[in-house]
Image 1 (cartoon, helix red, strand yellow):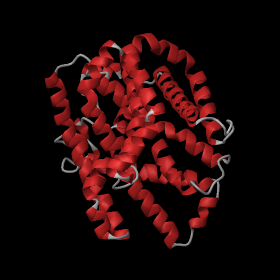
Image 2 (image 1 turned 180 degrees about the vertical axis):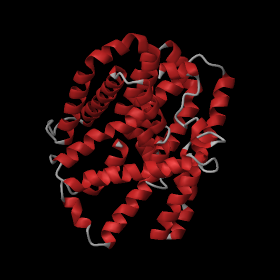
Image 3 (image 1 turned 30 degrees about the vertical axis):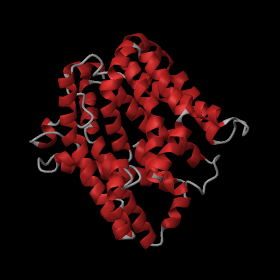
Amino acid sequence: MAVVATHVLMVYRGTADPNVPVSLLDALLHFAVPTFYFVSGALVWGRYAGRTASDYGQFLRSRTLTILAPYVVWSALYLSLAGARGDWTYWLARTPMLLLTGKSWYHLYFIPVLIFFYLLTPLVAPIVRRRPELLLGVAYAIRILLAAPVSSLADRVGGPLLVTFAVSATTHLSNMALGAWFAVRKDRVLPWLQRGWLVLLGAGGALLLANTASVLPDALPSVLDGVTVSVAMGLLVLGMVGFAFSLRASADVAEKVARAGTLAFGVYFMHPALLLAWRSVLDATGTSGLWDSTWFPVLSILAVTLGSFAISSALANLPATSWLVGIKSRHGMKTATPATSSETTETRRAA
């Protein structure tokens, strides 16, 4: 829902003052994507530390169906939407680069970056196993110190599309590393996170809000600004993890949450299309002024989220379409292995 909310609130970006509630909420909700990369780092980089090459090869083959194939189909859908709304020749000429960088639509960058991190696993896993703190330090140094040079190089090599990919990769490398570090050091650090999750959330949220609202001095060097954002997001993610592990739910509730979680990948792919339809209806009926009200963004977030879940559930329950939402099963969702599943009993316990 946090990802859906950030995309719904895009309508206010560039128009709302940084200090107004909608801008501050938008900033806070950006914990969602870093958290997902954190989980991926724990379940992929952390899981394959010490595993064999055949395990890794099997993992990549499974991801071809559960991630790569749906990504290509949804990219084609969004490219068709873009072409219908603009110049077909423009989009067709750039299709290969758009697919490689995830810029067929604004949210799809996530998948190529995730695949890039998957491909780094054989290089990263030995470091995770032996020196997870070293990996974490290097990843944050790359995010803080090398983001600008990497972006400049990407611009010279591949232009603006490659810049977006490079920025996302350097930014979320630290979140993948943080997740891998947590997976290896879980027994040691989890008790501290469970006791201090509220402090972590408060500190991370305060730093992020201060940076968004320009409370911090304008004269801060760009490096320190990068440190502020990186530390704030890391604290927020660790706070969310501590909070999640502190929850005590019944087996029935846990099963329902897990089943809803299997639909998250489909919701991620689908919600921008529903949001586009939602906004088109408002424009066509002359009711776009509703965005100025306090309650309408909340209604929009709920409507797009619930609609995306409903359609994802319908697709997931049909064997012929379940793969479109990342469900790996010949019988639909009932025997599903989701795209984000760890796929083994050992990893499920670690998760």
